[in-house]
Length: 86
Image (cartoon, rainbow, N blue to C red; front, top):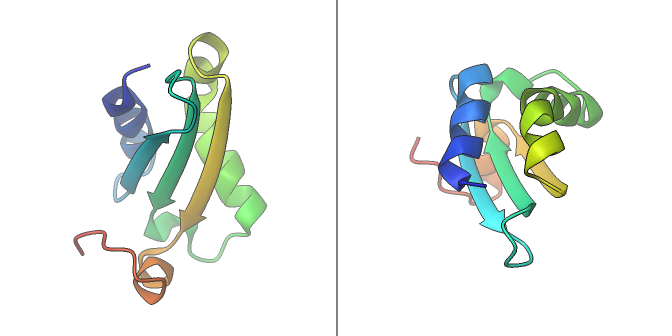
């Protein structure tokens, strides 16, 4: 799995998203994703994760075995000291 493909899939569905992709195991099929988007404002964490997983469904079936998600708004990222470039 090309990490740039994962980023592009997420950004196609969440146009303002800042996305970081990390390989958790060295096999490129267990991914740790940080997704920051203001489209998450006002929706529960489970809904944020469902939104991302729905975007990745086709890729998950073929190329990704496991995903660990961290989702938040840009304001929350700033409070946590995460530099998104915004």
